[in-house]
Each structure stands twice: as structure tokens, then as C-alpha cells.
Amino acid sequence: MVSTISIINEVIVMKDMPYKRGSLDDIMETTNPVKGYKGFYKAGNDKFVCRGTIYECPGVASVSGEPKLCEHGIHFCQDLRDVLEYYPPNEGELHVAEVVAIGQTLIGYDKCVTNRIVLVEEVDLYAALKDYNFGDKNIGEYNIGNCNLGNKNSGNYNNGNLNIGDNNTGGMNYGYNNNGLRNIGNSNLGDNNVGDSNLGSNNIGTHNTGSHNIGCFNVGFNCGKGCFNTESVKMRMFNKPCELELEDWYRSYAYTILKTMPSVNDPHPIDTQIIVKRQEWWNRLHSDYKQSILDIPNFDPEIFYSITGIRVDDTNCRIEILGKLKP
Image (cartoon, rainbow, N blue to C red):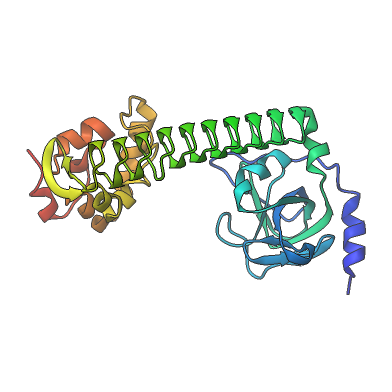
């Protein structure tokens, strides 16, 4: 039986092997050795942990069965910089090991998966990425400032990506002491806040606790436009009032399904390719999923088409579904 030390010594000579990145559409399969990097969070006793599994470095790890990208196997990246995208810095102390896959391996665009891997040695992230940063003690790429962990931060002590300011945790924050994503202002906790000291998401104003508030000192979810409100307001769906509150909508099955629609962050699909992808997505949906969307209060197929680019009557829906559509 080949010892762990022998395997590690054998793959060390492969450290400078070239690699070919897969495409977004095609996944390459190989049994040849593939070099890369794997991220971990450091646990007690200096253990390397990834998704609850403890790894030894140096060491050899394996799983049973065939690997499947994003579902089963030991995942890693061929480019060290790609690793940073998959390990949120606010979840633990990031460490990275140089690895060589020696089993059955699938190569995707920015990550790979294998059923057998060798952990060769830990990587000094500061040294490996220093040429991409302007400042001191940054881990990541293209940071301007000091002690940033992530990519394209401008400022100091940011954890995440594309932050501008200081002490932000998350991504695309503009300001100071924000924790979340896409906040503009200071001391926000949540996502998509504009203003200061909001606790929640999608608030515009200051000192709101909850989400989807516009104004100041509102407490709750969707308390409306104004100040010092604690009661939620009803929604409008398809240009008409309905009995749903915004919180009900975000918890609905239809909303969960619509989040899987291609380019969901682009509400008006002027790009022809996006329209085609969305229509194909709709055509492949199970009839029960379509029914959930068609059951949205006040559903109007023409309004739905004008916003999403999807013709719901272009597919073989059930008779009861077709009965709801305008001619």
C-alpha cells in the first residue's frame, strides 16, 4: 500500500503543471493529475475544515462515488484568486492549501471537483497575492488600503469584495461599518440599505429596524413610507391592490421559483439572449411550478411579458391554467 508521504512526494513535482480552464457551458472530465488550491476555515487545534469535514495538510483525502460539480466530492479551484470567491471572510479565518487532484476530476469554469486529492502545503496568502494590492496586509486582489480581506476594496479593514470605505463586512458597500451587501451609508446591518444605522434590508432612510421601509425610525417589515410606523402595509400586484404583505410575498413559493429565472436581477430584459433564456426556462418548468406563478394575485400575462419577456401561453399548460389567460 502506497504511503501518504510517498503520494505527496510524487505530486510535488507536478506543482508547475499548466491547466486549462473549463467554460461556463462545458465541464471537462479527466483522470490525469490536476493542480489547484483549496480553501478552509481554521478550527481548533489548527485543523483545516471545509463544510464540516476535517482535512490534514499535508495529507490525502478521498470520498466514495463519482464526483459531481456543486453536489458531491472535494471541490477546489485551479486559480488561487478564485478560491476567495467561495469562502466568505466573515465566516472564519481563511486558509488555503496547494493541492493536486489524483482521482476522477471534473473541471468547470472557476472550480473543480474530485474524489481523491492530495494536500501538499499551506499557501502564504499575503505573499502569493501581494503583487495585486496597493497597501499592506491585504488578502485578495486589487485592494487599495490596508488589512483588507477580499477583492477590489478601497479603504481599510474591509472583509468582502468591492467595498469602498472602512470596516465593511460583505460586498459592494459604500461607507463605513456596514455589514451586508450593497449598502450606501454608514453602520447598516443587512443588504441594499441607503442611509445610516438601518437594521434589516432594502431600507431607505435612517434608523429603520426591519426591511423595505422608506423613512426614519420605522420598526417592522414594510411599514410603509414615513416615520415612526410599526404596522405593515398591503402590496400592489400587477398594478392592482391585493391582500398580500411584502413579507408574505418573499415567503411565497412563486417568489422562490422566480428567483431561479435567468438574469433575475435585470427586471426589463432588453437583451434578446436573456429573453430567449427566460422563455426556455419557462418552457422547461414543471406545470405545478407554472401554476404557482399563474396563481399570483391579479396575474396578468401581458404585464408579466412586458417585464420578464416570457410568454406564458407559448407552452402546453393545463386547461385550468389556460383559462386564466387573456386571449
